[in-house]
Amino acid sequence: MSGPGATDGTGRPHAEYRIEDLAHASGATVRTIRAYQDRGLLPTPERRGRANVYGEAHLARLRQIADLLDRGYTLASIKELLEAWDAGRGLGGVLGLVAEVHGPWTDELADRITRDELHRKFGGIRDDQAVAEAVELGVLEPIPGREDEFLVPSPQELSVAVELHAAGVPLTAISGHLRELRVQVEHIASRFLEFTTEHVFARYLGHRPPTDADASEAAELVRRLRPLAQQTVDAELARAMRMFATRHLQHHLGTGTPPGAVFSAEESRPVLLPSDTMQAVRRLVGAEHVTAFITAATERELQTRTLDTLATSHAKSMQVDQIN
View 1: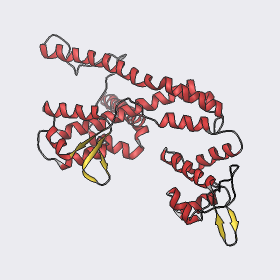
View 2: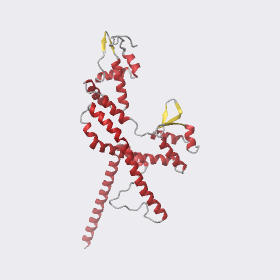
View 3: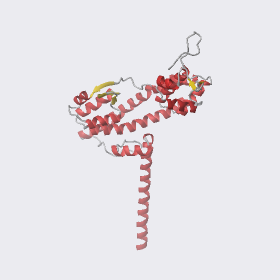
View 4: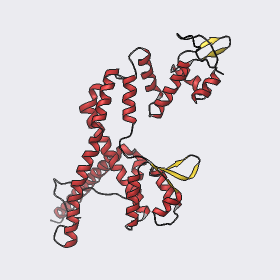
């Protein structure tokens, strides 16, 4: 248990912990605390007799580590941050940047929905397989201790699925479309981050970790640039939908080029691959490499077919020469 020890400047005693008490207060295990000590992530505890005694600094450090781990940082990168802080370089700006990047990238608020409400929204038919697939995709998130209630991170996304299903689209087709769409959206997000890192944030990331001032300025830029990705995608999606919707309407009215007509060399057209194919490629090379893999595979197939055509033409030419 924690107990009195040395006093601070106000005469109040500092809290002191044995390792078991520190584990209980921090939520970490004794084994984890010892592992952090071995890695140099925790200050050396005070030795009293045969026992180690920990203080509030150790508890605060454990909570910082847990917070950074939750945000996706590795122990190695956390050690760099904490060493910089211990060396007097400051960590406030870095933690502010971490919080800004890790924070919500939309103003949409999560909601909750019960299993019964979910079934009513989708025609009153109980489909546990569709619910399980929605959980796998992150459209629904289970709530611990509430078996028949779910968190809905994006009510808008769920509303789209409800409307599509009401219009006659099967749930399996909706989930398959979402999987395909997600791959392409993740590619757009990755490219936007690469673009802004190269042209905006590279100058702030020269130090590892960045200085407190650089991190603070970078966090302010993240706040300013945060809406730009969605605004750009919204504008381009509106442009593309108008273009393709017009073509489809003209085709069905018999007044225009069919939607599947050949496009000019300067114009690109998205090609939707089967959901199973996209999942297999994703498992093989990872989500960030899907586009590059498909591009390379397509180019390789074109090269192979070109070589086959040349070889066939050459063989026919040789046959003609022999006959003559």
